[in-house]
Structures are given as structure tokens and as C-alpha cells.
Image 1: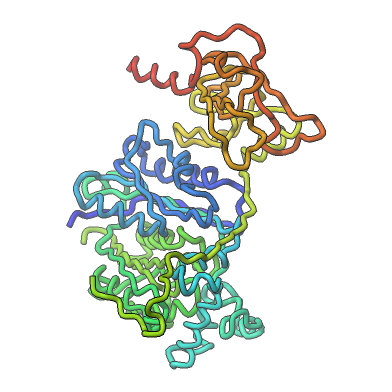
Image 2: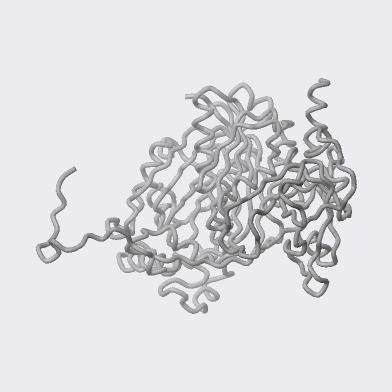
Length: 339
Length: 185
């Protein structure tokens, strides 16, 4: 296995952004390139993640290439997924030995459209999508199973909401009305526009670009069945399998950056990854407080990398999810120094 | 493929060939910083372009970025309402929703004087056989009371009678600068 590290990251999130995707991404892409002294012509592979349904435009990612400057022409790819999966594609390309550096970025602007309608379009088109169930109500089905099956308690959900900064204390949490019983507003993601860019480099190059590269020692992504009816919604076997394959269970982790968009997701992800239900280390940012569809997952990898660069972690795990109810999951383990 | 077994009650009936599940989603489009400035001024019959901070190339309409280099363009410049045709197409088939277009019609890349890239627009008051690369054109605007912050302000472009610019000087100049640089290197 070829060693690959995250050597630079830049991100931005705001509740409602007036910049276009291009205007938003140029400063971020410029910043990561400049921070490691690379020009676009020095970057072997560029991969992005975004969604046309969010942008409301077909092939919107092609326009965002204006932010990269593909002149002379670049080697490029795109996934209609969170940027964490774009990073995976870049990682595979680096494993193939045909390139040494990669630019990965992703972005989402939910503010122009109706997020509940956009999210409904990813459901099964014959039996579920025509009913237009909104994401919070679907999440509430899972939440009730978790609560009534004894997998969690309302107090624990309140803890997660407080930790993520959605409410200041239990009192404030319990004063909120249900928006999708048993979920309160503080259990559900607060959506944000935003983007993130990172630079990857292989062993031999990464050390020249960074004093302290965040080495990817394991990465895997798995998917559960699409139909709600065939899944036990209190579990996410794809999280566990991806974590196993990424080596999460091989040693302790100091920092966990979890893409938990609902408090109930955190319950499941922590259990499947064998993490403490009462974490001591805080995440650097919480998708519950600012969830940027298509970027939140890659942002988790960026934040886990920052923890390593800043010496706050020796071994960090980042998790990304896509689809409804933790259907698809990616787990990435990052380590400081030689592994 | 194994045979699909369906209940007796459904046997012999017409199979479903397609399912119709209408989808409608609404967006409040945000034009962005550069396009907002452009549309505001366009509403006063002014045409703005962006100036590239890299080589001074003038890009119109402005998108806030020089896509060749991936850099922000924050400087604007006002452009004249005349230019030339960089290339064109004569269309003989109607397009849905544009009953106002008499066939055949001419769509062309219009290069405003001073601009380094062109944009797509209609050319009219010109028989198709007379249209040519390098032909000088001017904007025909909607009546003043119909002008707004929309790309529809200019109805079409028509020949302005000035002499053509030479064929080999027509078209994309911003890219040509760069090609020349590369050749020199």
C-alpha cells in the first residue's frame, strides 16, 4: 500500500452565502495550493464532489472548474457524492502509482432550494420518493426505534445536542417543541452553505509539502441496502465494516470527527465504531450545528487532519455519510508521523 | 433470467410499461457577486466586463473569475455596445418556446470591442447569406420601459455598416495571448 497524506485543507461555512460556487471555491482552492507551494500545473489529479440537485443546474460541477483554472487541461474527475468519496477516488488513483499529488474539493449550497424536497429525490423513485417524505420525518422513524428499543435515551440525545452547540443546556433542549416527534429542532441538522478543499500527496512528496503530514493509514467505504424496509434501522453495519477495514479497532483514537447530522446518528455511529458514548474530546465542528451537504464528510477528514497537524491527536478517525439514515458510510484513519 | 411469477389475479393484464412520478423543485437562484453587479448595470443599459488580474484580459459577461487561471476577478470595466462576429450558425429548425424567431435565424459569438471573449446572441436585420466572420455589429435594445435586470435586454445584434475586421483578427483574443506566450517559451 502506498502511503498517502493530507497536507493542506481550507474550508468555509455560512448560513446563506451570496457568492456563487465559483466565487466561494476560488479562495479555498487558492489557499490550499499556496499553503503547500503548488500550482495547478504541479497537481496530478483533481477530484470534486457536489450535487446538481442542490445547485438546481445540470452539470453544475463543470462550471465550478472555473475555480480550479483548467488551463492547460487537467486530469479531473467528479463524484455526485460528498467530497469524502472524491477523496477516496483520489486516494485510489494515488494507490495506482500514476500520480503523486491530488486536489480534492467539494461544496454545497442548500440555501437556494428546498432542502427537504432535494433530499426526498434520493429515495427509491417508485415506492418512496413520490410520497415526498421530508428528511426529518424519516430520521424520526429511526429515532423512535432507537428510543423504544432501549438503544438510547432522550437525555443522551440532549447531551449530544448540547455538545454540538445546538442548545446551551438540557433545559433549553426540553423546552423545544417536537418538529418530527420524537425529534426536536436541536436533534436535526442546521444546514449551511459551504465548501472545503484539501491537498493529498504520496510518501516522498508529502514530507516536502508539510512538516507534519496526516497519513491516511486506512480508508474504506461501504453501503447498506437502499430500502428502509430491509434494514434494521437501529444499526449501520456499513459503518462497522468500513471502520474495521480502515483499522479503527487496531488502536485507540484520540479524536473522532463524525458526520452525525442527527443526534440519533451519533448514537449509531459511536456504537458501530466502538467509541465512548460520553466522548471527552470535542469535535472541531459539528454537522448538527452546520451541515453542508456534499462537503460535511470531506470537512470531517480535513478537521481530523488539522487535529494531527496541530499535535492534538496522534491517531484520528474521520467518518462521512451519504444517503438517508446512514445508508452509505466512509471511514478514514489518519496518523501522525511514520506508521 | 428466471420467470417472474405474478398472482393469478394480475395475469393476462396489460403490463406497466412506464411509471410517471412528476418532480418539481423550485430554487431562488443567487447570481453571485459579479453577476449581480453586471445585471444591475445591464438594467441601465450598461455592459460590464471583468478584468483578469493575471493578464488584463477582459471577460464579458463577468463571472467573477478568470476560468483560465482559477483566480477571482474583482475589477470591472464598461464596454461599448458594438463589436464583431467571431463565429456564427444559421439555424433552420424551430426551437420550442421561441415562436418569435423567424427561420432561418443566426446565432453568433459576439465579441465586443475591447473584450477578449465572446458571448452567444442573436443576429438579425441581416440576410443569412450576408453574415460573415469579422462583420461589425451593434446592439438593438428593448424599449427603455421594458429594460430590466435580465439577459433579455438586448433583442439582437445587427450590422452597423462599418468595415469588417480581418478574418484572422476575429474571435477569441484572450486565449490567443496565451498561445503566443507558449510559442515564445
